[in-house]
Length: 67
Image (cartoon, rainbow, N blue to C red; front, side):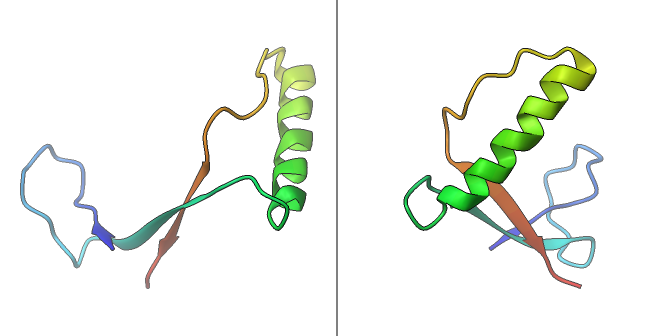
């Protein structure tokens, strides 16, 4: 589990500011549907904002924040 401080550049961690768990999602048969949805979002961003984003070269990172 990672703890993130307020972003003031300090070296100390403040667990009261924000507590989160970070994980990565590997593209495989079980997660294929998620990556297909992400690909659709990327395709739309390319059209709407004239981006040139191509595919996924890394695992998808996601963060779960605790309350």
